Image (cartoon, rainbow, N blue to C red; front, side, top):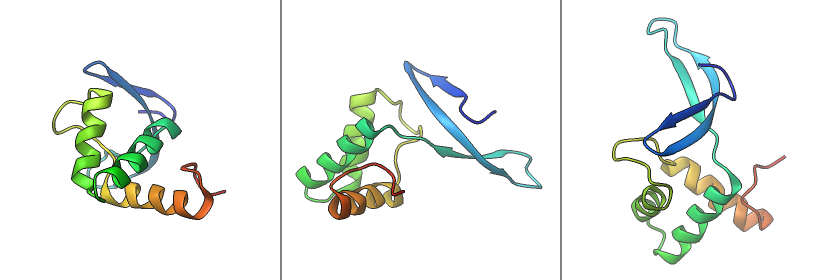
Length: 95
């Protein structure tokens, strides 16, 4: 898997960023690259669903047709986006 390569699955496609490799397993550590639209949906849902991370993940799966047990934004990512929104008024990455 190469950086910037699109990963495709059941009706969806996302770009990934290869972060590093584990020496023993020989498998790449993948950091998902979420779009600003996806981040905005997560932040909006977080506030409208009483700060529920699970609700955010469910809405995310429904909206972007991500199959069960596939990768969705985790707790750490969602809380980082919310923090960025509160501090900067934007869900973009801090520069």
